[in-house]
Length: 405
Image 1 (cartoon, one colour):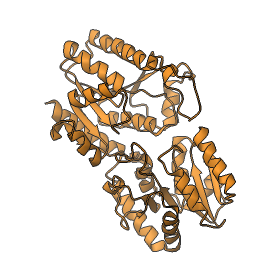
Image 2: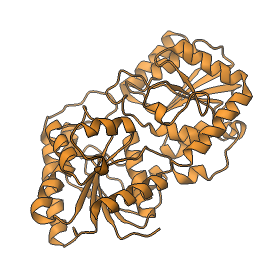
Image 3: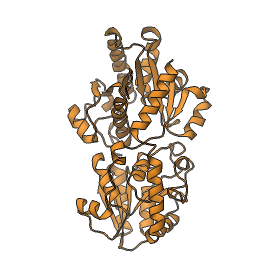
Image 4: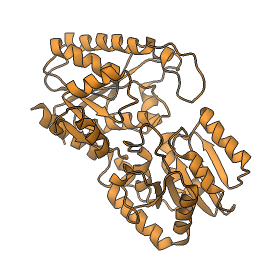
């Protein structure tokens, strides 16, 4: 597939970093480039982070060098501390203002070089940078288009800028139908809102599934049965519910919590120690490129997000699609938004969110019923074929080109 688009993807994140949002943004830049677009990922300099070469970033995320990267100046280190849960000195506004200034300089530089033509798309999840381009567009490059990807509503800051972007950008990409319904209340036309759930790397879908035995040998894991959670350990993800479910099992069923760092990880670790859970293993942070090996080692994969977090009504977790691609049975919270992808007893078992006993019962059912486990895993794998990053990028590019006409 070939198109004439030039996509400038504006990020606000440290690169490389361990957050799921950076994995998603880098993966989408690679996927956009695979559609034939000329893609540049623009990201800020954090002065509390060592400089990383472009090649190191490509390697960290396990992506190909099909897109370019550009780092711009910022003071974000002063007002956006490392998100590991630890305490840092934070100076309000300084970082956001620096992004406004550096984005304006970058935008005007592109304009002066005649690089913001009708085939140029500004694409972002970052409020400050997108707002600058939106305002400058009116006077300097009205022929360019600005598309904003929305992952949540109430926690987006600054809110007054965020809602201006929602109303004035050329189009919105949202990750769930629930989010689209909320965006329609912002008086957007349905024709300018496109639903694109998150996804998984296409190459993962094309690789034959490793048996749990071979994956465990690769990771030097010795266990009878393994129940696994992979991802961040922060409020709303349900890691505490996962740990509580482990208490219902003996040492023959090992619960692996793969990922996490900082104070939230320490709190979970302390909880495991306090409960004297001998069947729980915490790995700490694992590089994104290695997570699939852990998922392949599992007998059951657990997705336990809770309803009490601000993004819970709209979430589209990356690990959901990774789990489905792993060809392992999934037990997930019965959040309505997850029901957009998962159907109980068809491609997953759903449990009552925050109910550790119900989670444990569903896990036990899968460990005892191999036919059901295989049935759910096979259906999940068939479902996820439609959710590769590459297919997501193709659909978004098609939407942007149709909207730009």
